[in-house]
Image (cartoon, rainbow, N blue to C red; front, side, top):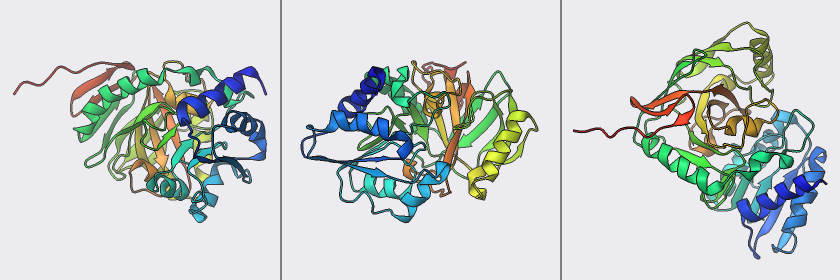
Length: 329
C-alpha cells in the first residue's frame, strides 16, 4: 500500500463519501483489488458504524450482470463503494440503492499502466471548482433539446435530449444528491433513437485504451451503423461484438469532461472520460443516469477539443468552456 494509494483512499472516504458514524458501509471489490479495498477500509474504520467487504468474481465488463440479477444486494447498507474494475453505476442494484437514498459511489479501478487508480493525480481535482464549471454548462443543457458537437478531427454529431435532465459527477456524494462517480463530468442521458452523424474517435475507447489513429464511426437513428476499418476500428468492433448484445451499439449518454488534472492518455478509463477538453458518447446502458436503455454494459468513446453547441448556443470552443452571449428578444 503506497502513500499515494493511501492519499487516494482518504480523498474517497473523507472528501467524496463524507461518511457518518451511523453509516453501514459496503466495499464491493474483486480479488485483484483487495489492496485498494484495504486502503479504503483503513480510512473508514472508526468513522462508520460498520465496514463490510463483498468480493465478487472478476467477470470483467460483465461484472454488472450479477448486480442486475441480485438487485437487492445493497439493501442492508447505507453507503456503498463499488470498487471493481468496471463501473456498476448503471446496474439495477445501483439504481435500487439510489432510489432508496443510499450513498453510492462508482469507483471503477481499471487501468492499463499497472498503477492503482487510487494513485492517480486526477483525484486531486478541486471539487468546488468542478461544481462551478458544471453549473455553467448545465444551465444551457437543461433548456436545450439538441446538442451538436464538432471536432478538428472531423466529428460532426447531433444528439437529442428532449425531456432529459443533465447531471454531474465530481466524486462528492452530496453534490450528486446521494450518488456519484469518480468520473468528474457533466452528463446527459440522451434520447436513444436520435443520435445522428459522424464521430471521429481520436481520444480513447473506454476501458480499451487510447485510439491509435482517428477512426470514423457513423451513427444513424441512435445507433452505430458503421466503424471505419482501421486498427482502432477493428479493436473496437471486436470489443463490442464480445458483449453479445445489440443494445451496446446505442448511444445513451453525452458527457463533457471537467477534470483539469486528467489527461486522455488511454491509461485509465475514468481519467480519460473526465479530462477537461473532451466529450464522450456513452454506449449501452443508461438507466441510472435517467435514460431508458438497458444493456449488458456501458462504456465511452472519448473525443478531443470539441466545439459544443446547445440549440445553436456555443458552450465550448476547442475544448474550453465559454459563456454564450444572451439572446435578446
